[in-house]
Amino acid sequence: MSDTGAVQYWYNTKTGEVEESRDRSSWTHRMGPYPTRDAAQHALDTARRRNDTWEEEDDHWRGRD
Image 1 (cartoon, rainbow, N blue to C red):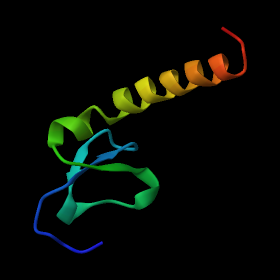
Image 2 (image 1 turned 135 degrees about the vertical axis):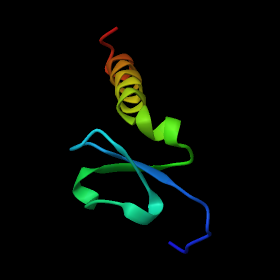
Image 3 (image 1 turned 120 degrees about the vertical axis):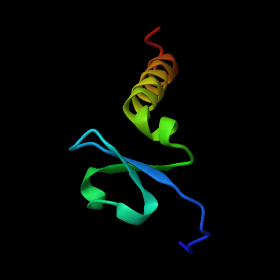
Image 4 (image 1 turned 60 degrees about the vertical axis):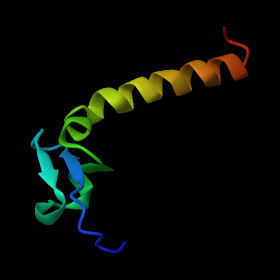
């Protein structure tokens, strides 16, 4: 990925903190990138909602509704 100069944000699942593009921790604890600090801060909520939606879609596809 090339550096466009735009700041990106990651959520660190180990520390619970948001990190900017220039000071990222190990990839093993990062979710992102996100375009804003707020979006990164809510990464777990976003992932949870997406997973719930996918589970519902899978149940529907399997005829378990």
